[in-house]
Amino acid sequence: MPRRPTGWTLALAVALPTGSAGTLALPAALAGAVDAALDRDAGHSAFALLALVLGITAGADALAAAAGPACAAEATAALRGRLVRHLLALGPGGRLWRGGPPPGDLAARLTGSAADAGGRLPAVLGAATALLGSIGAIVGLGLLSPWLALAFFAGVVPGVVLIRLFLREAGQVFARYQEVQADLAARLTGALAGLRSIHAAGAERHETARVLEPLPALSAAGHALWAAQRRTAWQATLLIALVEVAVLATAGALVAAGTLAPGALAAAAGWAALGAGLFEQVEALVGVAHARAGRARVDEVLALPPAAGGTAVLPEGGPGELAFQGVVVRDGDRVLLGPLDLTVPGGRTVALVGRSGCGKSLVAALPGRLRDPDEGRVLIDGVPVDRLTASELRRAVGYAFERPVLVGRTVREALDGAGPEAAGAARADGFLRRLPAGWDTPLDGLRLSGGELQRLGLARLLARPARVMVLDDATSGLDLATEYQVTEALDRATHGRTRLVVAHREAAAARADLVAWLDAGRLRALAPHTTLLADPGYRATLAGATLETAAT
Image 1 (cartoon, rainbow, N blue to C red):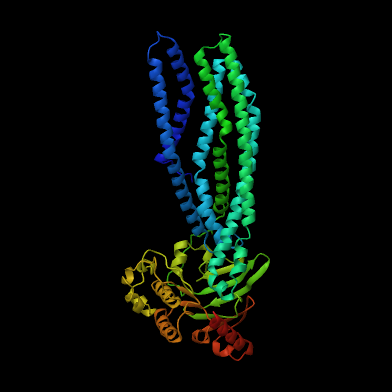
Image 2 (cartoon, rainbow, N blue to C red):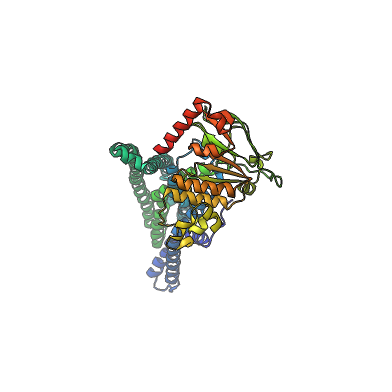
């Protein structure tokens, strides 16, 4: 949807044409003032008109100078807001997160490309106004004498060719520059995310070289742009000088022949400079090319369709049965999960057990559409989750993660309605009381351990009346005693609700009603823990999962 014009946009749209019109009228006003000065019998009206034109032009230029940056800032803020909303609407299961731009690239598009695109309107209006001013100046030369217009037109064709070549080259170079810049940002983001591992492995030098690897390409793109700008600038300067000399020589000959008044020479000089000014708009053209390249990168993300929602709601009083029917998840041509057929009976707890990479977190992501399957269906109480409305799906499925993210300004907002009872069940009430401002402690600057974060995530989950609760390694940061206390409280608080638990410890598998044993993306067995213990492969899987958890 197009953005409604704001006051600054309207001010810019008025100021630029007004300033251009004033600049265009200035040579004529100056010619009148020159003729009046040479004619002793002339009044002062020509001088008053010149002063009026100067005042209007100066005022319009000042307004345009203020409105241009403000208009660009407003457009940038609106575009960034739209981009953020669209990214969030895509959801973690959307196409963006499957082979799409990495987080660093998206950050570069949000900060850099959006800012470039936000300056498109001022850049286009400025270039268009310069074009109209040049056309008006040519018309003014033609009104003075057709010979003046003809002299000017001798330089128009090479000037237009020069501008088109520059725009095409600059647009390609800007796109390349932004792509390399985004690659650099993506590498840096990845390095910062793995900073502990880099330091632990002593790989700082190697990682520095990897992050900075795109710098030569970035430098080459920047130098290519500067070379194009420098080449166009001197060619335009030479062309302008030749055009102005041709127009002034023609005007001087006409004045000498008595065809033009002396004041017309001043007007011809002014209009020749204005008309040739079109070829001096290298900076404006750079802005247009920059804005076009930035907008193209933003539009690449905005063109991705968000995950389609449905209109269905769950039947009242359903038990929360969770079914996976023929589910397959791929990464390109590689099958990550499936085919998977699994039913979690309503009100029961199923633990997902398997070695790292077997697909446990993928299965856990499917009920809440954190990832959509490439084949098959996921159903809650017989209704496919992709047919549920977004609000109904949020009410139906609740999550607790290994590394929960706190969203909001304070701890109270981050807990999203969780009260003392939920915090107590998650064993979070004790450290919450010790915070500087308790529940109203700002999140900015708040430092919590992994276990404390997990307890807040569990408290947030317990506050929701979800039919299906998914715990993806949600207690791995707790010591054994705290984990036992939290698990006992969770069992009481969620009694009768369906639970899907990613289990890395044998105790979590033993407490579940059933264990779904995953192996290489497939369901190897579904049975109680005590039954599966008879299988040596299952015991080996549990031992491996325990070792992996201890290693992390």
